Image 1 (cartoon, rainbow, N blue to C red):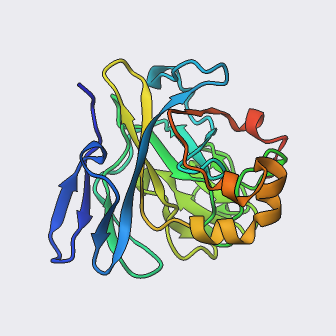
Image 2: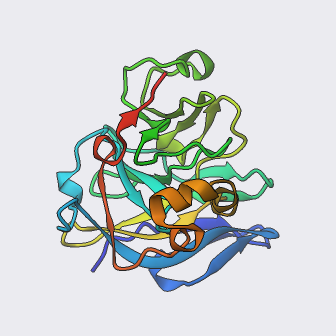
Length: 246
C-alpha cells in the first residue's frame, strides 16, 4: 500500500475536491482552466539506475530529474522541517488551487518544476540559475523577500519562491508559483512522480528554447517526449557544470 499525497483542488462549483494522482488520468479543471495534469507514474532512480529512497535523501540538497517531458527539469528537495499544509495558490490566470504539502514520514519532501515562472530560466547541463538556497544563506533575494535562505531563487532576475508553501512567490518579478510535481512515497520507501499541479510553462518553454532542445536532446520532438518508466535523479552539481547564485 502506498502513502499517497491526496490533493484538493477548487472545482468549477467552488467546492474543494480531493483527488489521488493514481486514480485519475488527464486534466482536472478548476474554474475555466486546468491546474492539475496527470502523467505516467514513473520511479525516481539514482545515477546508477537504482531506486531512490526517501530516507536516503540529503537534507536541503537540490536533486534534479526531468519530468514529465524528457527536457523539462524538476527539483526534488528534502526540507529541514515539515511544510505548511493546504496552501491556497493562484495561477497567473487567476485560478485557485490547493497545494496539500510535503510528503514522506515527516512531510518534508517536495518537488517543483525547475522552470522559472518569470522568463523560464532553468537548469541545463551547462549551468543553472534556478535552485534552492539553504536556510541561513543570504542571496540578493534576501533584500526582496526578507528571508535568509530556505527558499527557491532564480538568479536570472532574482525571483524567489517559498518551497514550504507550494513555491508561492515571495519576491521579484514572477507572477505565479512554480508548478509542483506530485511525489508519492511507496511503502518500500521508493519515490514516484505522477502529476503536475499548478500552471506550467511547458508550451512556452518548448517554443522558446528550440536551439537548446536540439543541442541537448536532439530536437523539439525528442525533448517533448513523455518520460516513461523511470527518471534519473541526481544532485544539481552532477546535472549542471555550473550553479549560478547571486
